Image (cartoon, rainbow, N blue to C red; front, side):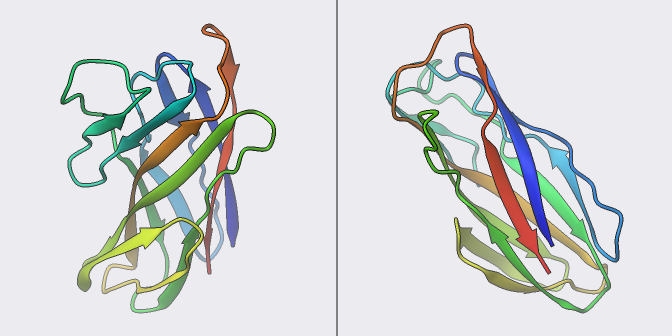
Length: 160
């Protein structure tokens, strides 16, 4: 199942992932929005560490040591089944915005697994059938943006 998640970005405030939920044999739910808190509308990048939320980069606004919100999604499926998960990057499609997500996937039955954009990971859903995906990564602006404009890039999470 491929899930397209629409993102809204206010370049000087935050990146927001819209809540997405599908009711089939499996479901995905957004628990917490990926939020870079404050991004300057200039060429550069801002990264968020998946473990600490620490923001680093040339366009991260705020004081040194600023912390953003790591995204958290939960897939609920049949317990003790193997699920393949891919979190896709968002390329510059002419809007000057690139998102390269990375993070970790955890269940109640295994150690955390690190993932990088566009790479499939097989994960056992554990005894609860819940798979938690924690998303950080790097947001890059390849062109200067209008300070007051909103942009809506998208990111995809595929699981089956």
